[in-house]
Length: 365
Image 1 (cartoon, rainbow, N blue to C red):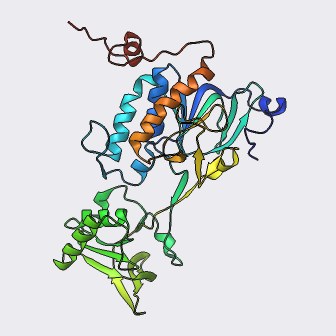
Image 2 (tube, rainbow, N blue to C red; image 1 turned 180 degrees about the vertical axis):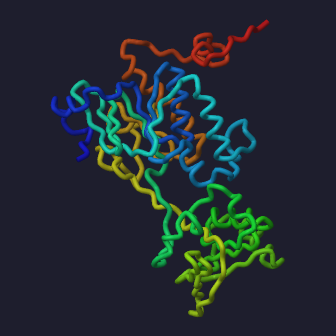
Image 3 (cartoon, one colour; image 1 turned 45 degrees about the vertical axis):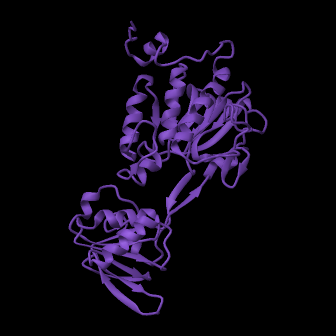
């Protein structure tokens, strides 16, 4: 049972269960770009962090959903992919040696009598921490699946909900289901690389960027790909291999479309999961922050940064999350160093920060 941190402090018995737990100053929930940058901002203040994520690798949605998709709004970086952004953030935080706990979800957060928190994960990892930073993006998420009886047995072989390795689709007959940006982006990407590309959408209207829709229609007119309006209602197989899907159109007619690979992009189903049980103020599945000075939630010592939070004027941008992480780190410092005055320093000129980062101080004439 999850115990809300706003309830009474953990009992001595509960706290004794955490004897031998990892003792740390900060726990970050979420290893996406904002969670990784939170490590950096805490590191500059000499605060070591443990990072927990339900995914098997760091990078969050950037790596899980669109590792090869270009990102154009990172300051001073004209363009980078989600994977490149993640790799650079990992390089940036190397001096701070964070500890990652992957493929596990935080299942319990409990306030202790000493005002620290007990934290436990789904794999039994236990930590005692002074502060918690929730950088969980949209929360736990999973792809919305295609609802056709029996087709799930091809999941991971011929049925895919994301593209991990684009090379496996080269020279294949591909059907892509969906009408959003992911569906259109990958359809356009595979034209000329796959043997054939069929985009399957249940209606004429698309949620994707108009420029992508226009490009897709132009390719269809040039017979370089095909658009079918309808839904998958069945499939056929031979020797354990998916060979074709049955597509029922708006006219009620069912057609058979051969394929090698089926890509489905019906969007994500985000859930806060256990976070919803921690006594935090929630508004439309997002965590409300008390103020934008330090991005602290209604529970002292718990901060929310990135897409998981909400406040007046909130913009769901990675760069906004970076800004929030910086202020949250300064907001958390008094909990960790109650007797220490924290001074603002610049990485350009501070010898102390140069030492922390492991770089030489520049000499200015």
